[in-house]
Length: 264
Image (cartoon, rainbow, N blue to C red; front, side, top):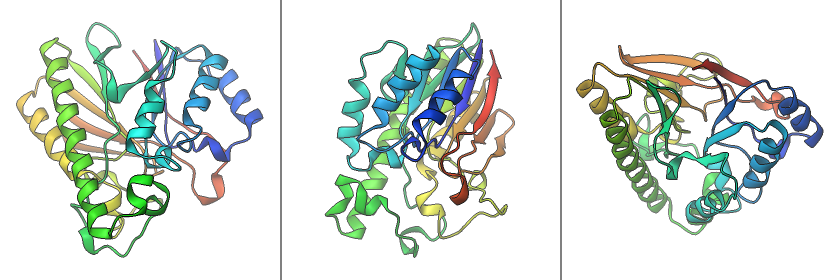
């Protein structure tokens, strides 16, 4: 079985004819999308369109752009109302069996202002203006809510990982939007940006994954993340690897990139 991994599609910037041609020519059994599919008022429509074109099973998590013109609860509600058994929202699903030894779990995740410049970063992202939960909040309250969402994500994903480990899987793919370690947040010029880290990385998720991997050294954990738009690979432990997928740079919006193809 082939699992094709895509991330940061930003389909609201892509011509419908391009989308149709891309997915019509995509030879795969299943698709993993690690967030930033489109905006909150359209990501679910795009997922249904993609599935109808490919007839592949789609596994997905949401990114920050999927909450634009929406919010945390509203985006989740829309993801859960997709009436198609072949479109699976990993944040709210049980572990997915890919083969006898390999499983897939996932959660949207969130950045937590824990790394780099922290709350003192001089970066102010569009999330603060375009996500309904943030629009009317003071900056310190945005930080507090972000930390809360990151904690919820880590707790939920930890329970799924425990369940998956009990089931006896030896390789576990973990889908999330935000990379869990700063070393995986490599920009297009090969750097880690100190000021962007608070809004790019989930240290809380990283701490949880480190604990799980250290306590289960016989299991291979592979994290598939997005958000950074630069393809990279970081080995945190011998059994814990983070892959960050390719998304469009400023002059590349309108294109879709394949981050990886896994033969399972």
